[in-house]
Length: 248
Image 1 (cartoon, rainbow, N blue to C red):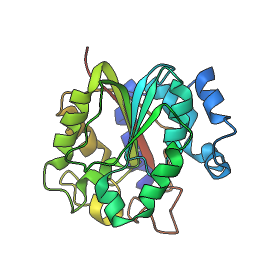
Image 2 (image 1 turned 90 degrees about the vertical axis):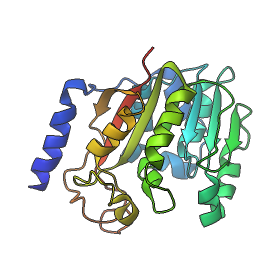
Image 3 (image 1 turned 135 degrees about the horizontal axis):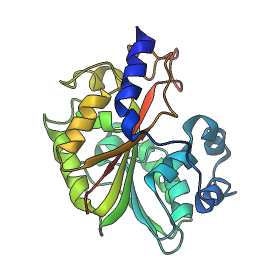
């Protein structure tokens, strides 16, 4: 049954699913940057950052946001990809820093040495970006907008704010851990997962157009019933990769 559920999810996205991603040279160069921590590079084979950023269309000169940046894994790659003529806004929510002070230290370490990166640490409800963006990347974070700390409807309102932040034609790339059907968003706070169909509908309600998916992080062996932090599944979760575009 589990295999059938995962297969069905992929089939729903199949008409807009992208084929194998060719990773452009600027992204390859960013991945090979000797300044990246060795621990980051060790995760590349499992996380497929090159293919993800190629799918998002990130290129030199772009203005992008790493939305809820965590340890800065994608921040560093984005900084080298967009180059001197581009800019990266590395956003770590104040709520996260309050929960765990080390998030501030990780943000500081991730942006060090990059003149084209601006760290932001406003609250989720007030964060703003200084200019219209070409792309927003958020990886394993959309479910966080549905945690108990956020009021009902908060994630939908955030989707609209991100929509307004993007340039016409801009891309929102969302990667997150798959949950079973959960249209009421009861699962995120318990398992740190989210129902892909519910997330898609929520984001589309802001005006975004669904623009494709990638199956490269799918894992049919994941039962969708354990917390992503459970040792039995951590680092091996079933994940969806959705690209949304602002019309224009």
